Image (spheres, helix red, strand yellow):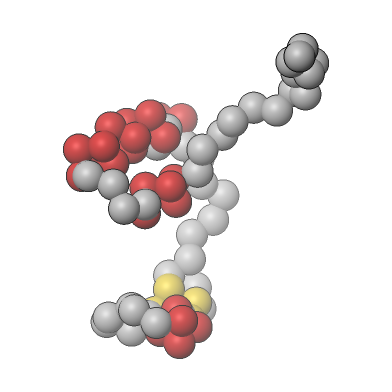
Length: 69
């Protein structure tokens, strides 16, 4: 069976993959490849978020609040 023509899809793994249950050494190795160098990162805005001291549940996350600038 022939492989289909390339679709133009490009794998672009997201940083959230580092939340997987992996050994620390593997996470560190992945981070080196996933996180761009800070010399290439540009921010267009900044927000300050207030949140509970301990974040465990969905309710904790829903309690996040953006503080006025």
